[in-house]
Image (cartoon, rainbow, N blue to C red; front, side, top):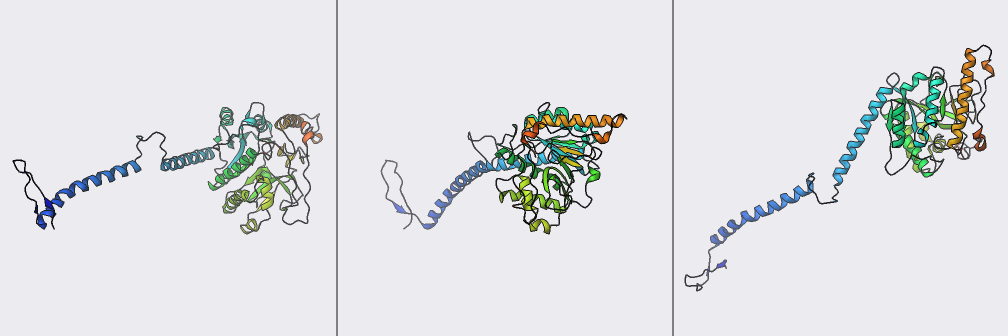
Length: 390
């Protein structure tokens, strides 16, 4: 049967119902269809608008993950452009950067940063390197102090981590800081720059570049140098590294950074001592060279000849206060030597270091490597318990 309809008579009575023909039924559906389509379209458009809208008219507390991703990407791109600009302005011959890193504890007045800058000033023709030094600040206070004293400062903050206090060796924040540094240095290589990384407790007395190996991709200072720059049994120190930007070193730094997951609880220097024997390092043919302590010394193994020394590191020392005290003495020793070069009554060859003094109470000499263990797990004992950067 067709659809039945009814109508009221003028007198208010009901007429008899009758069946409508099929064409009348279709006509009635056609009359109702446009209204349904319009309603459905309006509801659909409203839902799509609410889903995709970037308008600020949102419910309180609304979180849009697409906005978060976009903002993060924009911030990352801005930081990368900032870094590119700083590196370009500081580069030596357009391709080499000197880099150091600081937190607030090391950037405080009369602390490590001031001593580092002073060493560049009193070193033998080292003042020019200040124009090429990029200071990486791990917190806002360190950054604020840097921009007061130095032209090339870069903020490398980490969300949820406070790096402003003195970070003790092997503490959780110390490890995060060390691996953050490795990842940052890999970025510098990715951008095409060679770099010379120097810890802030390394004093500069001469130009180090003439003493780097021409065939080295990755060159690293030593706590204990065995006499052969290619000998992987040398006990290295990650506080002073000269690295050329190429495919081999970029792959090496990526591998180094990723290896932290295989050696949880170890810092970058310990992990380097593990992976330097890996087949991957051999396969990518990265040329590793170890630097002679005769030119790049420290409290562990001093550079005895003042006529050769380029840098001296306050390693083998626990505690920021001890380091600051003994570096001050080291700078006094250097001033006396420089004075002797201008004063014929003093013999330069008799110059010697009177530091360490305060550091002697925490002095720990690295154990010499054993030759039998090919992969170095037993060769490298517990490394020096030093503060902040090794």
